[in-house]
Image (tube, rainbow, N blue to C red; front, side, top):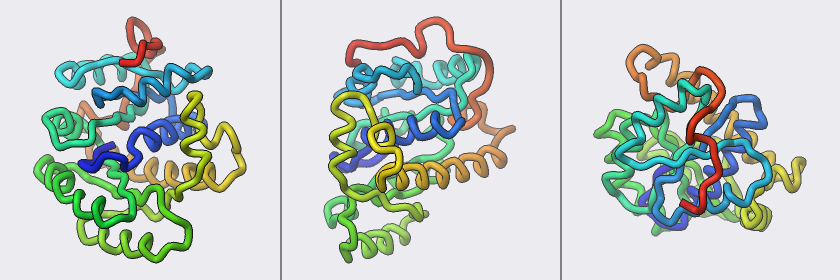
Length: 233
């Protein structure tokens, strides 16, 4: 997850997609929080469910730790990043199989996507925009999707603003775990299906060329320090 604009919903979307991937049988899934604010780690520590797992790492250790996680059996890593263009984001993009860019449908958010797009282009990595926290039936939502399409691929699934997204994150859950049949759960499931398909296609193209790809983690059960609970960092 990468976005220069703060408040784009990276943390909420990271947690929801990780849980949905796990529920869909794409796991074991591991979450990584590179953002110094550690909001994703705080949310994970509130969870009762052990999966998706959480791996505590640093930017300098990220590439090596992904190799270890792959050997331990994890098949997907979802990484939350800070809301600024930093060396940390560049390091994550360098090892990512797909960069997901959550973008709210607002002029400020749309103007901020350029720097993230430039990073992905320089690294030669594919990206997909996700229109996030949209107001249902608002014209600006469709206008935002059109504007983003000039910079890259836009996911065909829009995530709309609903209270269950924020409410569920308070106690370590997701909208799918609160209301599995609700509209929010349906949107997240559809978005994950789309992203999973993109990851599969990307992995097939790069399986021999990208040993650090996030979609190709495979091996045994986690051991050592990965997947343990951490104290907010």
